[in-house]
Amino acid sequence: MNAAAKQKHHQFVIQYVQPALLGLMDGSVSTLAPLFAAAGLTHQPLQTFYVGLAASLGAAISMGLAEALSDDGTITGRGNPWMRGLITGVATGLGGMLHTLPFLFANIKTALHLAYAVVIIELLTIAVIRFRYMKTPLAKTVVQVVLGGMIVFAVGVWLGMS
Image 1: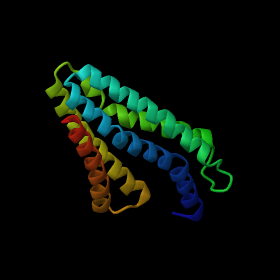
Image 2: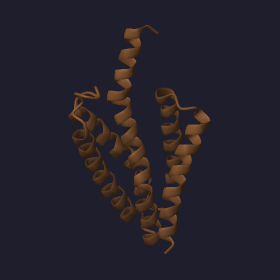
Image 3: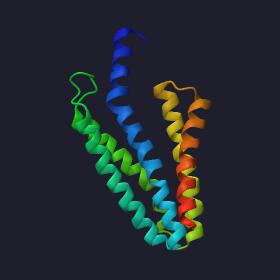
Image 4: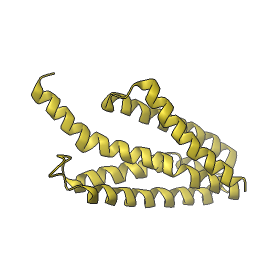
């Protein structure tokens, strides 16, 4: 890859991939505890869905604004702050909603099992994106992402058993 191509790739990573990865990681992980705590406490899939929806939307707005307001891009070259904020916000919402959607099923056990599978897929997808674009060794990133996600998941399950 020549210097111009490397620079273009670098710009793509810091302006688009990094904000999307930040949002996906935050949405996927930060919503686990409230979602699974609600499932354990209520045993009601629809109520759990609304907790996940609220957590996902709240996190999306918060993360989108935080990214947009954190850096105007002139010093770091990270690009348009509102575009980064939009990318981060949408990815955060998506990350939170993917494992929330199973709670639209009326059966709590079905919803939980499907949500568990979705969480595993989300975390592995994040690890692969980190490997591909951030050049983090795959085994290391899988351990980091899955361990972090499982800690937050365990907190949610623990609180849901209260």
